[in-house]
Length: 391
Image (cartoon, rainbow, N blue to C red; front, side, top):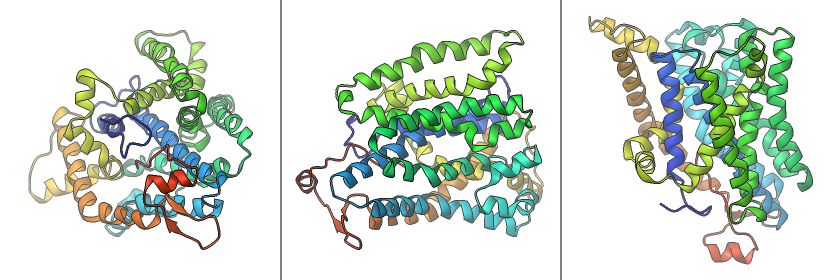
């Protein structure tokens, strides 16, 4: 496996996506333990991955801007066009289908969902509305995309690191304020600021990985080692031991930050490549495939709670016991099947259109777009790509 920043594809990051979406499905379909919180942990891993990849792409674009290869407007346009092609089609397809067939939770909040405001809708309801409850995290990511590109591309370079650190700090500060202000528990979880530390830690990993001082891995290694030797033991201790009541506020404030810090170590190590049996597992085709279609699996999976019982009822078949291993296998397999059909028949053909809106183009003047076909041309422009899109 190639492990440098110029690789076409970090295969083990897809394995992390597979782990994340599996944790979400386990939580929703079988093992809804509040202590393990597999769904929440899976979503936080997605956020760290997103912060890492998106920030890396934007820092690449910034370098192109600073070296005169591209304009800011061009870079922003390419970013949003590519995000639109990847995210919007399947999301709005699912909303359209579920609205047309009359899924109540979709119809009740359709305008919130269409505007990627599901998280604030749930916060106002102070509850999780069944088959749409997972849409909150997609809303958070889309809200992140609204302001983060402008910050990463337009701020003076000296302000990048303070901005990323401020983003990380906002997460625990918001959760502390939300607890002290007695916000309902759904709002404490779903408001975008509550996830800023997870997104920001991923962004910090991308930032330190691209600094010259990190050319031999020094800065990145120093940062990520905290995820293994500090965050992991504390996370294990929080699961095993029953802490005094006074520690509850500390866990609410910093628990997600510590888990996200461990996810930073996971992402950094997977980018370089786990070895041994872990590496073999992370590069196994079924695992990588599940990671590749994980976005579709995530979007579709909770709707299986409505569709699968309807299909079984039409066929006069008995469903497995809810929240049982058999139920999990049935619902998870259904989610993967639907996501696979969606990937091959709908998502991938649209995703392939991204070749027409490449990041690797010369556009230093408005309206000027010249494709840079090889590395020699990029070197001539004094720019060598150090980060690749893997979304």
